[in-house]
Image (cartoon, rainbow, N blue to C red; front, side, top):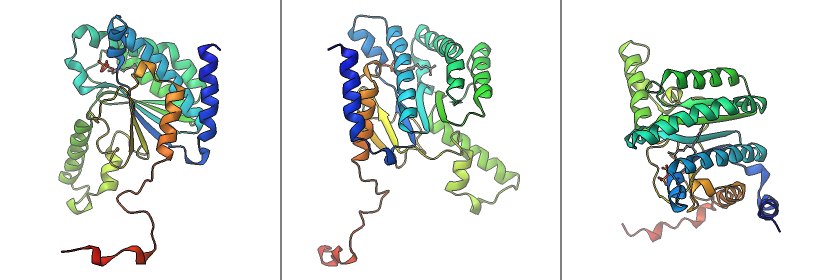
Length: 267
Ligand code: FPP
């Protein structure tokens, strides 16, 4: 049997295990391992990033087909500037090229694309491509793709704190009015529910400054699979794993009252 056919059959098998009523509506992904994937194959790191793009396309399709509504992916962190300038330039170029090539299909699929992060250090040519992709797709309603570029979770929180401090100085709000709702309304993801699921590839067990506020209660799924090897089968496995979790948000599973025993407490 061809490997494509095997993957298709595995997809079908896994799809049957998925509860369509409990698909996470917002999934965040740290697409890690592009460089290692290429190096393991004796290839330049750029090959890993190229393959990473085609995996991203596959996962956008898979999430949309499954009924997920929002995908937020980490494409370039505020820390990625410390990479050799050739790799940084390659990535910046790649974003522009991919966007220019794929934007018509993204639009025809009714996907609204948003770039989250500080775009100011990027070349004007890239800024233009990103901004026109956003404005072309701004009224699309089937799916939202947030691409985090030059994004850092701490930087986002500091930015929100500054906005709130300014509003307070201007007398627009009182300190006593600062609460989570107000904070949410200033985030780069404003208007969106927090991700129910975070997927991180390549086995690292870190959040790496990604969506620090928004991931407070997200379920975390870490796989050793490197991003360029990630595919729909691996994605469905993540969803099945998520559906096996019991999300308690700091509470406990609902139990009858009498099952709580004061006498267990020795204090
Ligand atoms: C992490 O792998 C990956 C990145 C820093 C870049 C991810 C970008 C893409 C997949 C392209 C997305 C394109 C668009 C247009 C959104 P790594 O290089 O850190 O791998 P390593 O940890 O093995 O070194």
